[in-house]
Length: 143
Image (spheres, rainbow, N blue to C red):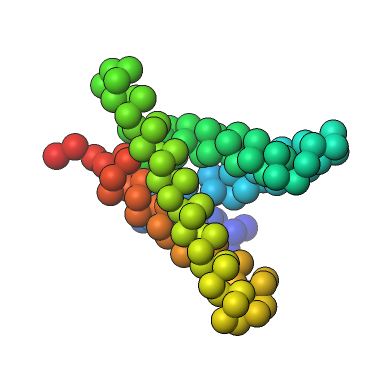
């Protein structure tokens, strides 16, 4: 029991030192599950791959905005205008990183020719880029 308490304390210590990053990774995993499950649901109902992917992307971006706003960066909008600006900034940043990911995939597969490796590299780049855009531009703390 003593070791369990030590491990528990150690684990929470690591979490609290980097709470924002851990929350970002946790909500990101939830976002992936939302995207994948909604994509599979739309495919089950015989929507095309493209339509299913677009709708799943939209749903997951909305969910990620809410989770990032409330649980990761914990930012409250001053008024409706700032809320709309923040949301549109978030969506535009995600559209930008979607294009970056597509470019990495296209160029990477041409160079490396191993789709799974390139996809993993692209995902790592996009996770970092989305975090930086959210932290320093979209949900920037006012000084």
